[in-house]
Amino acid sequence: MRKKIESKRAEIAVIGLGYIGLPTAIMFANAGFNVVGYEIREDVVKKIKNGNSHIIEPDIDDLLRKAVESGKLRATSNPEEIKEKDVYIICVQTPLREDKTPNLEYLESAVKTVAKAMKKGSLVIIESTIPPLTTLRMAEIIEKERRFKAGEDFYMVHAPERVMPGRIFKELVYNSRIFGGITKESAELAEVLYRSFVKGQTFITNSTTSEMVKLMENTFRDVNIALANEFAFLAHQYNVDIFKAIELANTHPRVKIHVPGIGVGGHCLPKDPYLLLSPAKEDFGLIKRAREINEDMPLMAKDLLFEALKTINLPPEDAIVTVLGLAYKGNSDDTRNSPAHAFIEHIKDDVKEVRSYDPYVKGTHESIMEALKGADALVIATDHSEFKELDWKTIGELMRNKVLIDGRHIIEEPPKGFVFKGIGRGEY
Ligand SMILES: NC(=O)c1ccc[n+]([C@@H]2O[C@H](COP(=O)([O-])OP(=O)(O)OC[C@H]3O[C@@H](n4cnc5c(N)ncnc54)[C@H](O)[C@@H]3O)[C@@H](O)[C@H]2O)c1
Image 1 (tube, rainbow, N blue to C red):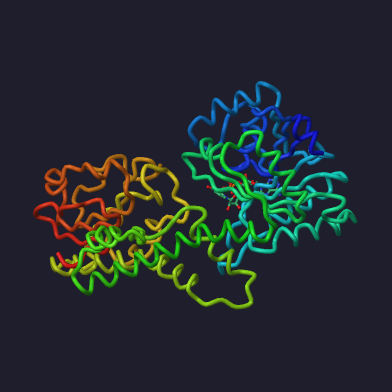
Image 2 (image 1 turned 180 degrees about the vertical axis):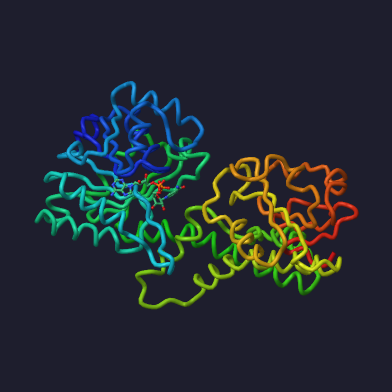
C-alpha cells in the first residue's frame, strides 16, 4: 500500500464534496492521483462534472477545471463507482442538532457506504471534525458491516482539517497536519499520502488525540473570545474603553487577549466546543459557560441599542433599525451562525422595522443609502472594509434619528451628532 501511495497509483474516493471535500479531491487529483468524488447531492455532481464549482473560493474554478479536464477527478452519486478503492477520505458535515448534541447521521451513513464499497487493505480517513472516540466507533461500524478487523484488515485515521474559507488552497498546502491513526501504521500511511501536496509540518498520533486536538484549537479560541467579552461587559460597568485596556494589557510579554464583539459565528467555532464536550461524563463547566457568553453577545448589543434609544426618548416599537453586515466575518459572504441573524431575531418583535445591508450577501437592501434613509438606529454587526470608510455626515443627513451601535469596534472616534454606544466602549 505504501508503495502504491508513493507512486500515486493508489485510487482515492472522497466522500462529500462540500467546502472541504471538493478542494481536497482537487488537490489529490492535481497531485497525480485518480480521484472519484462521491456526493449525494446530484446538483453538485452535475456542476462538478461540467467543471464548475458550487462553492466560492479563490482559485477553485481553474484548479477544478484542470482536475476534471485531465481526467484525474470524476464526480458521481453512484456508490458502485467507489467500489474497491485503496483510500477513502470522508468529508461530510458534522453539525449540531437543535439541542446542541452532535448529529453524526451524515458521518455514519458515509461510513456505511464506505464499508460496503471498500476492500481488504483499504485506508479509511475521516477529515470531518468529530467528537473524541468517534473514529474508534466508526471502525467498529466497518467491522460489523464487513467482518473486517480494524488495524489488520483495514487502516483507519482521523486527519482533521484546519483550513479557513477564503484561504483554503493556500492552507491545504502550508498548514501543518495531524494524522491520528487507530494504529501507528495507519497514521504513517496517511502521512505519506498527504505529503504528496502538503508542505507544512506533519505529525502522527492516535485517533482520539487528533480528534481532541482539532476540537481544542477551536475551543481555545471560543473560550478566549468569551473572556474578552466578559472583560467588555465589566468595562461597561467601570466606564472603561475595553479596546484601550486590551491594547495596554497586550503589551505584557505573556498576555494576548482576544477581541470582544457582537458574537462568534461561522461553521466551526459555535459547534466544536459542544462536540468536544459531548462524549464526556463530566466537565468543569468553563467551556459551556464560554459558549453561552458568546451566544449571549447579540443580547448585549440589543441592550446597548435600547439604552441608546432611551436617551433620545424613542420607544423601541417606533424605531427603524438598520443592521450593517449579515456575514459572520469581515469581507466574506458567509452567514452561517452569524451573530447578526441572532441580533435581528432578538429585536425584530420589539422594534417597528429592521433593515439590513451587506455588500456580500444577497437579499439585503441594494444600497447602504437606501437601507439608512429615515432609519433611527444603525448597528454595525460585521467588520467589512466598506464600513470602515463611511461618510458619517451624509449618513447623519439620511437618518431620522442618529443612534449608532458598534458591535465590531470599527469606529475609533464616534462621529459628531450621533448617540454612540459600542460593545466594550464604556459610557459615551
Ligand atoms: N468549512 C470549513 O471551513 C471547515 C474547516 C475545518 C473543518 N471542517 C469540518 O469538515 C467537515 C465538512 O465540512 P464542510 O464545510 O465541507 O461541509 P459541507 O456541508 O460543505 O459539505 C459536506 C458535503 O457532504 C455531502 N454528504 C453528506 N452526507 C453524505 C454521504 N453519506 N455521502 C456522500 N456525501 C455526503 C453533503 O451533501 C455536502 O455536500 C465538517 O465536519 C466540518 O466541521 C470544516
